[in-house]
Image (cartoon, rainbow, N blue to C red; front, side, top):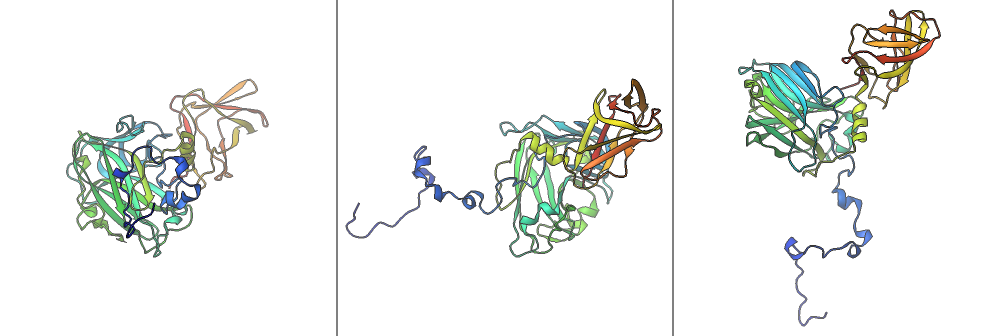
Length: 390
């Protein structure tokens, strides 16, 4: 329409000016919706740097008790860091925030308390991340990306907790605090970290970044000033203000929906199909067999006393793995030519690499060279896995 006098000054529309249903697909030209506008400068797919953040994969099992030292226990890709600060049970739990789409969480339960930590004591829940997965963050340049962490957390112990990013390539770190405000209540937390213009991540399959949920810290890690900006690592500044989750056997801590992404705001949690999530976890750890009466491969008598088996991993692994096996009397069997050899263990063949593997038993078989058969577990506690964790 035409106007008498001056054209009115344009005013931006607000959400109250746009009623539901007024903007339809046909009113939006294809050329006006571009990928950069959707992603706001960060990658759209696999934007979550954390693997298995919904705690849905647990190849090692759903519960481990009597934890007194560091290691991988239940949910894949997450490691417990522990130095003489209580005894713990870790569980893949079904206690999750309502209506958020999560089916699993990770629970840490204190079973032996330590209310007076020594100076070097510590407890954290951690994921280690390959440098080659972090190159798009442009760390160490003037174009470095900020990072935003988001997660759901629940504990009976309220107070201040610390979430740390630790660059192991350049020995630099940044820590931010969050508060659990209401006991035994799921709360969503979002924390943003500035980008670091110093120190690039190595472009390889080594561990470059550690994502640390601190849960307890002696004075070696908490007596300084919290490092809320990137700095050269000073242990005393890493976990200042952190509550001691180990001070009572009543204490427990749950977490799920862990996401770390480029940018200054958190997007909705990136749910992946189960098979995709499992395949990403299997790059670092692969369970080949577990339980009783599970046929897990073919084998042959290399000679009268040695059984060998060769196969391919489900996924190419991060590097040449080590063998993780539960051994015991007659835990495994080699069935061949109408006979059975009961075996207690296996060891790695020297030709194992990140794509294929060989296992062998050198002393417990009694067949004829060249005979073939299949391998089976005999005990509910038996398992064979390969470990290429960071």
